[in-house]
Image (tube, rainbow, N blue to C red; front, side):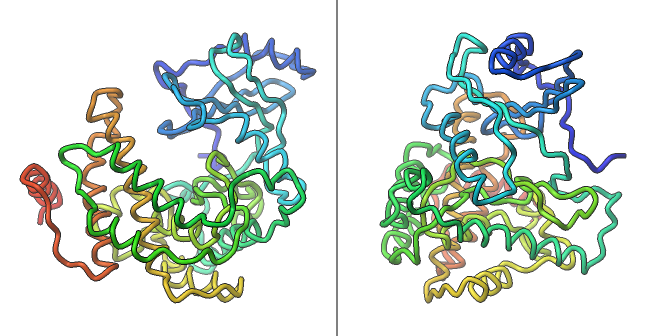
Length: 373
């Protein structure tokens, strides 16, 4: 079994008009030969990603999901330009091929880039790798170092300066994600009332402003097949902006599942941070602060914010399932994770009591039954 990630079958209803795309690519000056083999990468809650394998070209196409109404939520032009403008300063980005904003081609904006061949570390590392504990630790450090490297990119005086508003990022994020949660709430969702108030009452001044990725996870990393602890690619720049690097780190650690975490988080883990040799969340923070020289006496804020932000993302996805806007069974039990994130946030800020309405209590009882508690 190969450790190289090549994608899988295209999901029903997400087929790509490869003839139209091929004709458009030729119009952009690409020389394509032979039949094309199309595969699709896993995921799909956000943008859809396809591999187009020709005899003489290996390409990746990114497009928004069908039914997207607000282009700002899946801005293909922005994602394309972020990578194109960042590449000279951060050489682990795929090479951009072309951007299409002519919806007559496949009905939406999309862009094409050259594929970086490598290993994408998802929930579990490929068994063929047989990593030792020392190699796992080396991989962990290399991934953190790539985030640190991004946060050092000199964006001032370049096109990257237009990525975001900069100062005041922490406050804007708390207020923005708070509003998103309110809009996405369902009857079985926790209120997050105490958590939301605590975040608003504890907003720190920005530690600094830099380019942040905003979705930093192992499954957005590509590893060198010849030296699989080496990072050779970083993917998914949809939410990249100018902001506080500690917010980026806090958001990344919301996905970081440790060996002794709740069974709920272990069951929904999407990266191999539970392996022996990986840093704990505390070790990640200590390493990052020591290497960057940044200081904070309010780390709990960044960690709680990351948890709340992840809960909002999950709730927005679950809202679509709850209201039958999608039938994807993978979203069915997201409410369980959202309740678990709520409890985790409360524990971090020293709030041990969890209050919920009668409907939520009913679902919490079911959650405990599922977990055998």
